[in-house]
Image (cartoon, rainbow, N blue to C red; front, side, top):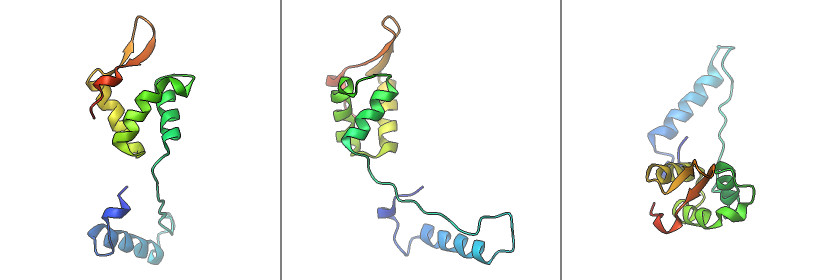
Amino acid sequence: AYRSNEVDADHSFTKLMENVTQTRNDSNFTTLPKSVARMNLFSLSPEAITKYIAEAVKQEEAEGVAELAEAVYAKTMGNIFFVMQALEELVRKNILFYDVMCFEWRWVVSKIEL
């Protein structure tokens, strides 16, 4: 995986991918796929991030995580990899935590500084 906005035609990774594609096309190896697939991933919407976070903290209603999702989205701009890292960081800082007395995830929005 790579960020397409950071890799131009002269970048070494672009040249590597061209080499891999050419090798696969010219190869006599029947066990290798003949093509290299490229897939562009775009940022997720605030609604999608809210739903993702709601599912991650086992909330049935997405509205219950709206403040948390808004804070996370503001820092990650919908990049799912950054969202996952942000949630992990919140857990490490004990801002997002599992309350064993209530058997549910809780968070302190006022302490969120990603």
